[in-house]
Length: 145
Image (cartoon, rainbow, N blue to C red; front, side):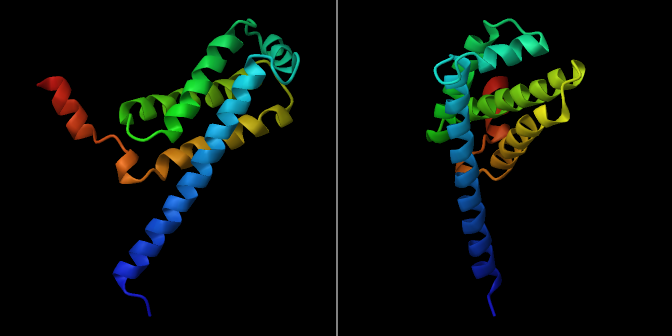
């Protein structure tokens, strides 16, 4: 029978593995998304989607730069405040994609990918180890004083 400490260590190790798998995939998807945004791979597919949901094509450049920077921040150590912003920005991108497709009446299959990536983003954020979490009381004490 496992002791409580052994059980906690096993849970912690499983959680860390799940975190790195999800975060690695999130970073990979962010880089892949940026290559589509910059029109390096898809040759117009992303521009077509932007036009379909009513965004100007230059939005892809802004989004591409943001997602590329977020991919780096997800993987690099420290930079805890930037990690929070990267997660929040990625969260907004997927929520915005879902909302935009809903508002223009896109087919339901256009919601599947953003919803899956949204879930991966939230799961990666929730599974962060303590060394990758922003300690809010520390951060806010630095702002106040």
